[in-house]
Length: 245
Ligand code: CA
Image (tube, rainbow, N blue to C red; front, top):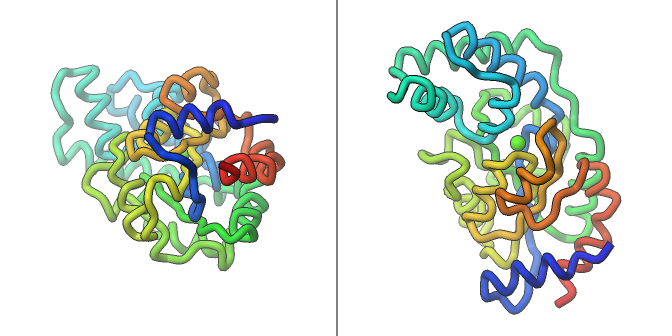
């Protein structure tokens, strides 16, 4: 497949001559881990119990937001006012409790191989996630041993404004010492794509959930792959196109 049309469109929009790729910024849930079905189940259950009309699809549409932001967004939409701190704390706790009863989330098929390929071609893999579970670093190190440096992982603990704001991706660039033309973003969710694009980076989506591809393209994804495995299979071809300008 030829990716040059989308790459040229991006370069023109940003006013860049070319990309000098140094880093790949990975989202975590739905990209590195096949965890979204569990998150969707847990969130929709907790939100429905609290009186919100909140389907699993709503979870996917809000994916990337912090827990507090997800609850506030639902509260504004349904009741026209933000949720109280007490409600936010309670629902976040309940969601974590339900999530903890599920089996450990598996790695996304193809994710380990993709990160290994990225590293093998001399690029720095980084993680940018809206998640903030305390066990997150251990889980990353045990599933992707030696592939991610701790200072190259941005979580919800590190930023005030999460996705869809560009802040987490901008912080990742700052931490890595990279500029927009030196990194690309890999996301699976519309708000994550919005954040990557708002941060000025070439953003690739892997549609690992139930939403239509079109939603990811409309959010600004330059390319949409049907899975991480497909993206992994295309990596050599894609990275050559990205760097050959
Ligand atoms: Ca995600």
